[in-house]
Amino acid sequence: MNIKLAGGAALGLATMLVLSSCGSGGGGGESQRSSDGQVTLMMVAADYGDGPGKPNSGETFWKGVTDEFTKANPNIKVDVRVINWNDIDKQVATMVQNGQVPDILQTGDYSGFVKDGLLYKVDEVLSPNVSGDMLQKFADFGKVDGTAYGIPFVSSARALFYNKDLFTKAGVAEPPKTWDELKAAAEKLKAAGVTQPFGLPLGQEEAQAESFLWMMGNGGGYKDASGKWTINSPQNVETFTYLKGLVDAGLTSPNPGTKDRKTVWEDFGAGKVGMVNGGPMSIPIFDAAGLKNYGVVPIPGKAGPLDTTLGVMDWIMAFNKNGHAAEIKKFFDFFYTGSAAQKISDTYKLLPVTNGGIEKLSGDEKLKPFLDALPNASFYPFQDPKWATLNPAIKQTIGGAVKDDPAKVLGELQKTAEAAG
Image (cartoon, rainbow, N blue to C red; front, side):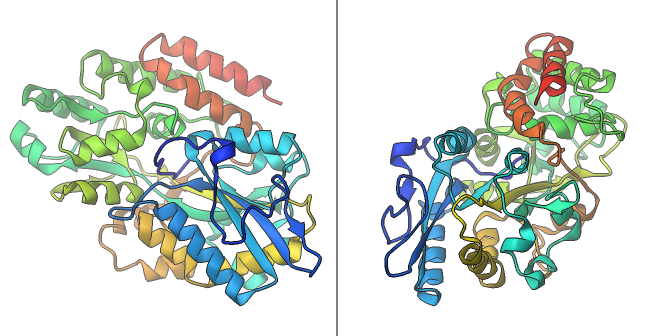
């Protein structure tokens, strides 16, 4: 799902950055209690990259949070290790397998840990006044069988960005509302010399999100209303057949299956891309590139604009192995009631997950289309533990559906979904 802004090179486990001033303190990856009663919590967090003009802003952000927290709670220190989004799921799985379980994890999914009994319930590590301020629709997706385990961390929604100058150059009067209009606009953009009429990131960073947006435009999705997996449904096969046609006609980013969204967004910011699906977190990339003259509209579907959008959440969760529920609760309450949650939204143009945070952003015109879209958002099937297995498989292979036979590629993913433990 994920909101994530990939940044920098992948960080290996041995080179993960320890941001707290207290040193590693984690006993090879586990939190510990010192002889004087001081507790060191280990937290693993995903790398959101750098905000514009803010090199290493992820490291700076977390160091500021942990330093401020420890000043207020001198008996609790937090070591935060930041891992690139492309690597975090694999590395955390290895850590857990090796018994190096963190106290806190911030990433894109939680459900796989629930089935293994590894997580605290939310009410064990978050005060009622904090959980009560969460956006209810988002918080409900943190539940498995009616019990909340995942805490929404930041959120986002999606829309279509289009370059107004390139549209004028190509003679495209209005942004597209349907797939036919999108193809016609892309053809005009190509004829006008635009090398990437539509930016199509189906690489491993977030192929599951781009795919879902297109599936929804044809009445499809990963599951149907009854909860049955429908990855290779006729609607989804038709969707990828349409996309394959765009790719074959040279109307998209070349080799979409190898393109990550950050690269495509950077190309849009540089004026090389006519249209691209994006979220509020792509705005800092466009700002950094100096692109100003762009529009934001609902994403086109086969017959008309989507009446929903992809609601994206990243999650924070607490592991129960080390028995530090009280200390974790203090950290979580500090994070959500202080300035930290607001700061991460400000830095990356991500959306808060609390009613109070949304209210503070209500006057930001750039974020308004996304704030307006959140109430009717659609979500990944987070609550199904199979998603933890299926999501990586989608990232790795679904890009092949616009290069090879769509029905075959989607069929293999359907088999993976049905066989996942």
